[in-house]
Amino acid sequence: MPVLKRVVGSNPTLSVLSFTYDILLLIMFTDPEKNLDQFDLQKGMRVADFGAGSGFYALTAAKLVGDKGKVLAVDIQKDLLVRLKKEAAAKKILNIEIVWGDLEKEGGAKLADNSVDRVIVSNLLFQIEKRECLAREAARVLKPNGKILAIDWTDSFGGLGPQEKDIFGKEAARALFEAVGFSLERAIDAGAHHYGLIFSKKKK
Picture (tube, rainbow, N blue to C red):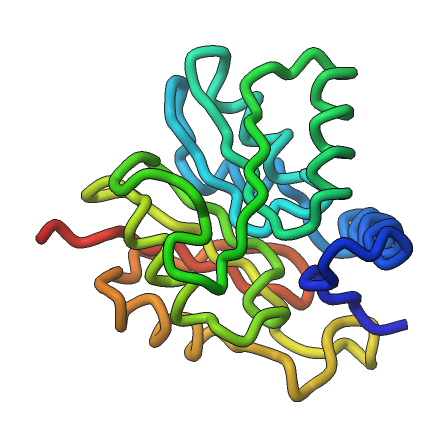
């Protein structure tokens, strides 16, 4: 069963399948808590989760930044955002704001310039076509010296991950973000069959 792309619009059936498969991937490969522990999130920070999907990173980040911080969960799938909002409310996590946005359009994140301290992009690069637009949106919304954590697949893992043609590897990710003004800070251990890169936004 291949990974389902998040860019499936408002189709509720595909949204449910994407949510279910996200859970499977979390159990098998990735650990948001471990990954975000390596990302230096601090109390009071504003964090944007690009392609928030089922919300595992948004929910974890919300706990790390505390009541005075905020997580802005951006996704194109309304159904997943509604699900995330309900889950956050049930867990009494009140510092998540959902944002319906298209990260493949200029201004599509619907966030102000220089307004966030951190951006998370997890398992999204292989799913979209206009990656340069996403990278520019990250650069636009991040404050000077802000940081982005990019996590994605290193391989198809026998078809359980993305198709080989869709893999967007570590070096490609580095080139993508450096082209819009980021500098690579370091790599992290992002779990099996994944890479993790932390970039910082250069001061102009």
